[in-house]
Image (cartoon, rainbow, N blue to C red; front, side, top):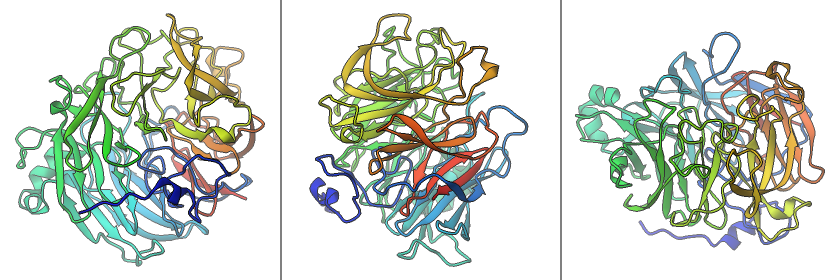
Length: 521
């Protein structure tokens, strides 16, 4: 199939692109098609978010959340939203897995249809967060994970709707649906999808999977691609780095695509049996053939040894407008307090041959792109900036619990103030602290942590929508550098990291206490 690339100028000049004048290109349309909005996971909305005044509607994302107070160690999938405002929500139905897809009218919150699934989670290491169940939209087709490493798809109407008795339109397997049907029980027990799905502009779907030895297709854990015609390809993780210990794609690591969508980036790791000592590489493969292109070990910049890829993390690679790639890791094993357990946002060129200046936090969230023109305080030369969670965990090293979010300049430098050894990191542009005191932290200025796997960036109003563990969703106004608006969602739950999303009508979506809230004017 021949692929035609739309020039960036065409996308930036489309009727859907309501961004302030300037030379910064936005990619995609008004649909929020996947985790992080687009295949690069930039989280850049092309429609402005409504003022945050009230909750329009709400729906649970977990029918069996963890019992009692404390951490919700579940990474909930992000809703995806069609261009015509159908909000598609992954729903966890059991205590350990069990998933359905629910679709709602974004304006009213009316349930339109439910799609059952037979997906099961892979075996996870002790202490790991449950993996996100992440569907994707490709035009008028919805893909969602099924058993045995298969995908179901549902063909939707142009308005993103399906009839009241909606069911899957079909099922596909990257190793062949005929082989799956002939050995269904074996594949269901021996092969599981282990990452969110990512879809490119041509409808190819990419994801990581776990495969037990001896499965009928001879699969080894790795990365897979499924084309719209149902044909597929895969490559074993162990073949990508030259390190025989790198045997799987990192749990919950959604693949990311280069800006021309010819290269796929993802992290591979060892067996993750002990999440205190896992190491890994960032790798790139050809999107059409899955042939290896490059790899780089994910090292802790403070000590030089391998950083940790925790299965509690929800970090995924993000590709910047210049092609640079960003991915977060924890400190090296045995040095968890070297930087107050903040980890590092590692930063590489597109070829993964040049290691660039890291960010001072990054282990458990996916950074967002912020056009430099929408941050009035910025006077530097970069065309884009990076938004990251910036918690300073109370009691970890010198951490005092003053938890922040930050916008960083990826091309300017400062000395890190948290690391026990000198490290040069990205320059802070603006930061803002949480507002709700945390008396349990034992530090006088401590505030509730930010609860973020990815933010939703709104260039039109020069702001971002983000979640806090205090139970509120906030608008961070870049012009005033204040948390200018907020909506109370619940009592505040120490919850595994959550995404925020902006729909085509400007409704913002945020998670708290295992509930999805639609927020607007």
